[in-house]
Length: 151
Image (cartoon, rainbow, N blue to C red; front, side):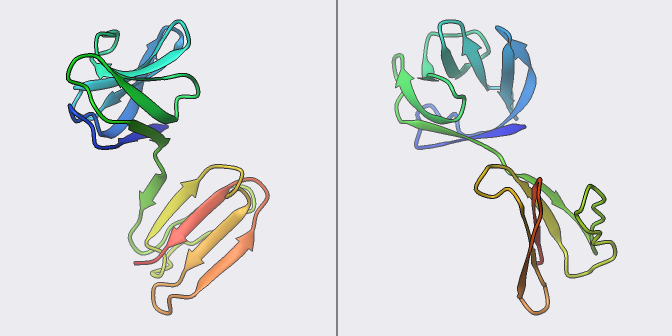
């Protein structure tokens, strides 16, 4: 799972973070350029800092890992917001999905991307927007939510 950090932050720690190992028994997340990390500090805090293990300045929150983070340290400002990044799979000319009751969209030019959405509110739906007509079809599913989008 990837995480997205947003906010008006100084220094700028916004961006997408990917899981890269563990730290203190919890997953650790590194920003794409390697400059910032999200990691767990024993004592029940998640931190966003320059470098994993550097607790001198950055942003902190109590679990869970997602939500608002408070700035700490000299020169650090803004409230960081951490959210789970949506999983997207761009496709060209259709997509095949063969898992459980989810139908196949193989060779369907109307389907341009698929997005797996997680969360109780979205669980159990399948949404498809036809690229040519713009119509949206919704089918109920029992376990996962997959959003199919046309261009």
